[in-house]
Length: 122
Image (cartoon, one colour):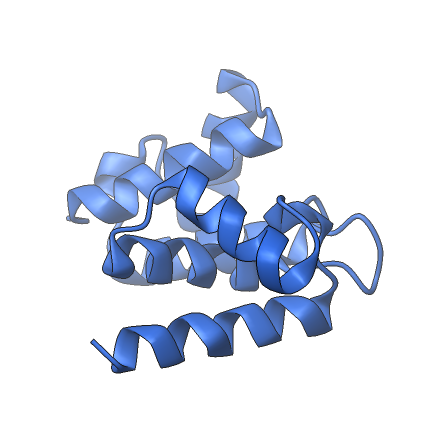
């Protein structure tokens, strides 16, 4: 049984992908052999996340931020307890954008390293 944070990640991804209920259930069954995320075990969760990461939905171009980078940034922001406005200001100041989705893969790596450094300094 998955913890509530992992279930929340699945539902965030479902919403971001704009996946309908039937398609979502079919994907769960195809990838992990279950019809409900509540029935996933850790291995099923990992398979589902790899499926979403490879789906191509999270990259506007080959150079764009990856799904894995997006999720890691989200995790770091939770650890830092930064709200959306604070992070948007950080991006504007240091990366000249206010949206994570507009970062290149290389810029996203730099953002991740910056956030890890800030977290380590606490």
